[in-house]
Structures are given as structure tokens and as C-alpha cells.
Image (cartoon, rainbow, N blue to C red; front, side, top):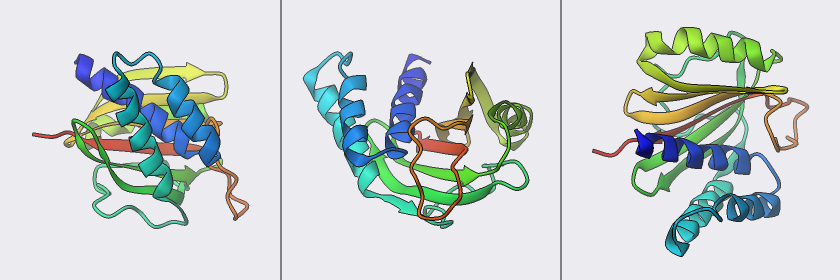
Length: 174
């Protein structure tokens, strides 16, 4: 269970880092990993965030292998950006999709909490902060975060759409 929680924390860093300016994200990843138990872990986390940033794509294309049958989002949520498959140390591939929904973070998090178990997910934790909510999950061979609301450090897209839902998943190995 500690391993799942640790990975969920790293996934959160990846998701948040991907949503901002590349230099800010790289600095944030360095700041967030200062509590790591070794220099090697810090380096691995920074490399993972940098790889994700290199794979950020605007548009509605889902990453190859995205579990569309297991990922359920509220009606009206449209994919507007994604992070292609990257390697997460100790797990395997990790990806993220960012959506525009126009709905409140609490309402979307309530939707996730109510509907994800029907699609093979176990809700591990839920955090509600001012303007942002996230549901941490495990299932379908993944660990992940379904976040909604004012996504911290969200990018300014070329389109007029605003990211207000993010789904970040990492495959469990073995």
C-alpha cells in the first residue's frame, strides 16, 4: 500500500508538472523531490517529469493504449491535451489526458467517486481543496489520479478551451 501511495504522489507531480511552463515544471519537480531519500530517486523523478513534458501534445488524441473502456468521464468532457506514454520507474508506462468539461471540480470528483468503481477502480483517497478535487485510484492494472476543478498550473492552450479535468495513469508492473 505504501508503494501505491508513493506512486500516486509521483503521478500527482507528473500531472501538475505537465500542466505548466516547462521550466516551472522542471523546477517544481526538483522542489517536490527534495524530500526523496536519495539523490538517485531525485534524479529519476526529474527525468520522468522531463520525459513527460517532452511528450505533451495539445489536441484531442488519446495516447496509444489508453484504457478507454475503463476511464469514464462526465458527459460533455472533451479531451483537449495529453501526455504520451512515458516510463515511470518501478511501474511501466504512464500517460495523462486533460479534458475541458465546464463543470465544478466537486461535481466531477463526485461523479468519479460514484462511477469509477463500476469500471473496475478502487478509490484509495479523495482530496478536496479550494477550487480543486482529486480522486486517487487503483485498478485495471493501473494506479492514478482523476482530478477536477481549477487544475493547478494548467497550461494555456492555443484553443480557447480551459483544462478542468485531468486523468493521470501509471501501469502497475507484474
